[in-house]
Length: 106
Image 1 (spheres, rainbow, N blue to C red):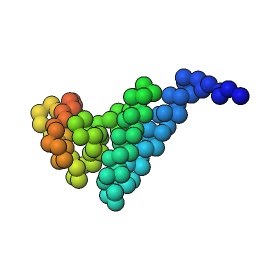
Image 2: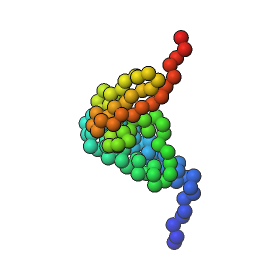
Image 3: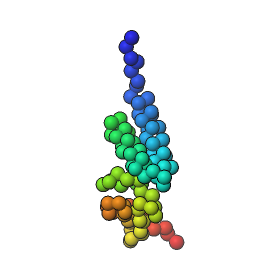
Image 4: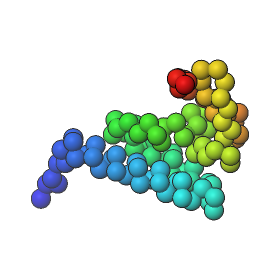
């Protein structure tokens, strides 16, 4: 009996739910098992590339682009405000990520 083919939308929906679940697990397990947390991030990124699904922006800015580690403020990253951007430095590899922001009007 042939296997039933899953539609493209269903594949993307399943992939995005698995990605968010893996990233939540990575955040929960970071303190107790940082290696496992990094592995969860790697798996989530591979699912994302294989299924052509974007990682949500809130999670994307918390993953280091160079060493693929989960950036948690105060533990694996340092956050500084400089001029019109935010500097987030990964303490594992030293990569500096810069994100623009607008100052609030007072």
